[in-house]
Image (tube, rainbow, N blue to C red; front, side):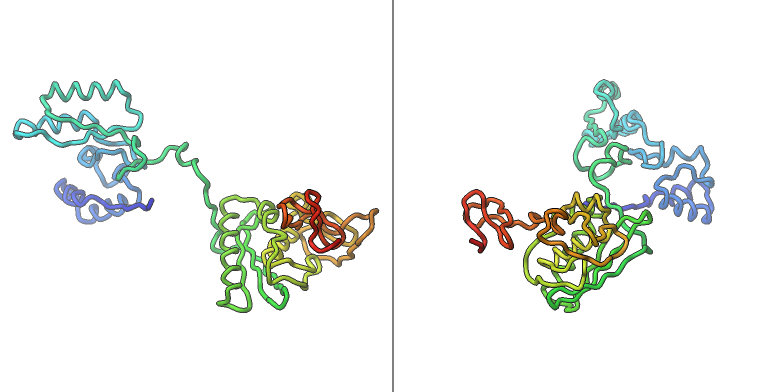
Length: 329
């Protein structure tokens, strides 16, 4: 599943003891080896002893490994004493050329080897052992940026149609929002479970770099129960809990330009859209000079007859495609 397992070869300890290292030196070398992943650059290890510990693959943080021709020479030393062919893989770095592989096979033939297999690092999608990924490989795919253990946060209390809850938002060091938690008063309820799921999905999306304005634009004006009046003067009526949460995040943490891009209301007399606190609201309805205090098409439903997006007609909607209405004549 993509996990890693680090094991220090059991023969390392015996080899160090055979080479004459003290028990204190052996313990320290093994500790450093497990931490840095290579036995190279350990002060207690003599440089002339390094070849003893060379492996088939170059370690991610080191430079040494057994030469491909070293594999062949080891096989050639043993082959005369065996009647069958030796099953041995020659490990090659990822930049090995076709001509180099050809020369290896010819050298094996000259050494009277009966069978040779080669494996070039990274030639398969998955392999049991691997060296460090290249910068190009590391850059592929999204990267999740988690919040630090301690971070600044803001708590917001809300109530919609009798449903009370709290929204907790956490921030990165640069002030950008990185996670939200939603706690409903009725813990264990279906509504509480749904809100917890929405908060988790939103937090993961933010940590993978999805812009907040994109989430606000997508989930604002979603309509389902419970819906109703709220105590927030910026959002006096919420079409659903999801609608309230994302409109709150938009009006609280987005700039005026970001709010407009996300489909939230524009600047109106008496309505502050800056993300630093609330102000009193004077809604202006039916005035062509001052415009709307809301986006008249932001929550337009689809026609129940033909599926086209309807347009506002007074307090209801009508379909310009087939003429159907949502209740108004």
